Length: 614
Image 1 (cartoon, rainbow, N blue to C red):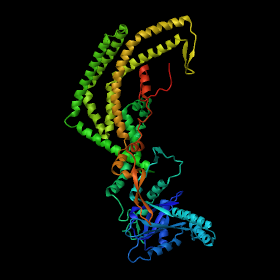
Image 2 (cartoon, helix red, strand yellow):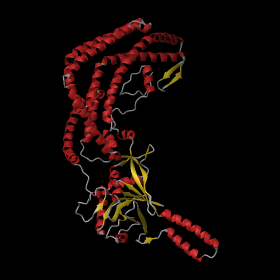
Image 3 (cartoon, rainbow, N blue to C red):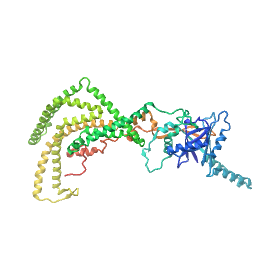
Image 4 (spheres, helix red, strand yellow):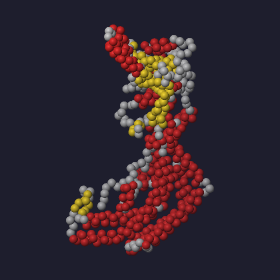
């Protein structure tokens, strides 16, 4: 039987006194939290432990005595040993350190409910065997007694074995042990492990560490804050200033929420438009963030604290990048330069599209197209291009003002500027989107028509109620009409497919550019910068596990191990603390995307097709 004692490194050279800590339930181990020095009054020690228990809710107790011999304290060890009767425990640890040695020894005293010392079972058996050996008469019995004696000695050594696990109290108190074992998270129904209970005990007993050597109280103790409490003036000032800031932010958000709840913004067209504009979606997302940050309630747990900290850092970085963009835009008249570049660029794109349509209306790549349908489609799309050019020239006098006022949105953050840019790209390429919709609808109509007519030739039909293909008998007139329609659609398909292919490629270029903008916004919104900063500069704060190394193994003393914290991997940090965003929804697979493009289905980022239509 092995007894593990988690011992803080800061107490290795503490003055003689009492070990304060707790036993870990369900395991044969104990964690030492502090050492109360001599001189002390036992009644005051009991009152102090009860006070800490009421504040923390932990079952603290006096585990035993700690002896570090010094000049003039020869009888200290025996005095501390006698204190076990005043602090009744089933097991009393007597830890003794000898100067000049790295390790220290430990003796475990067992007591019953009445406080009487219980002799270990192995020692009772040994005494019994010695009596039997003294009364033995034959040699065979003596050999059997000697073999049993060796066995009992080995059992005695195993039962009295003690392992000291040294740990850095400050790092363990500040760290958070993540429930990951071999890449598989622990379930909430499993009982807490020994290591998790030890981390929880050290972290939850923070009031025990408030007493330092400068206090005037009757008790003195050794722990990680014995030399003075660790604090930061900047952190304390931020805590004091955060309360009025949160109240002001909450008042502003309440006004903004009242404005958003006006009946005009509740109309269906307005709600539909706001749900499709990236700027409005980002504004609602940041509003939810601000509501969370403006709450004056303390974080409930570590996850909630990390979530709020990541939000704060994300907002600050977003605003800082936005201010850098604003400083660049309004310096050296860059707004005027962008406005003068945007209109000629739109004209150039429109002229390139016009030349592309002229090429498609001829014999593109030597292909012979259906001339009548080719001319109808080409003139239809050319008319839309002329309308678009007129619209661009009509908006050109106001373009500089739109860019000037739109650039101010970057003061709220770079994500707002990127979202506004995505909406402007969508508006400036609206004609390309229209071309894609026209071509996709026409191509989809022919594909589904050909598939239905192909089933007609095979004597099949699509049963919309049962969502399956059933057998069906057709008469001669139906087959004749179906043959004519199938022939017409089949010969018109290449012309339609070519227009659909060209405009789909143009649409994919625009979607790709908007996708890069949306990924950038999503990265700024969701990337856990605070958690990554902790992982880089204070890796022990995010612990994935621990590792042990032998610290001391001297004859005549217990085995001493050093417990080091294994930091959480960077990928696990991002996965665990990534802030969920509005774009975190299940995406279509590449196979489903290719299938939709092949059959001509429209691809909307906000709609997922779940039912089959024919």
